[in-house]
Image (cartoon, rainbow, N blue to C red; front, top):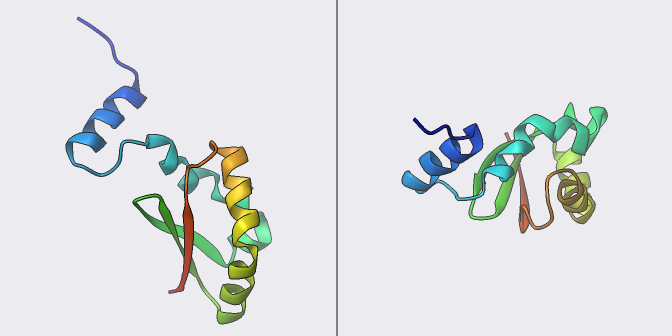
Length: 95
């Protein structure tokens, strides 16, 4: 009997269901607090992933405007924390 890593199993399941082939992208849900920092993380959170885009739910219009200005900085932090090129785009929206 062969053993497979959890990562291999999840990649297989995600590929089978055509969700994504990059399981590393899903790390954003567990590391968001580190990427965003505690203050920002209290006002926004990752909501969903789709085709290289991370959708982030924001609780206030003022934070929405601020986050749009910070988009490139947030993408660089994600690249450093997870891996380069994890997301090509961030889209912010009010919940």
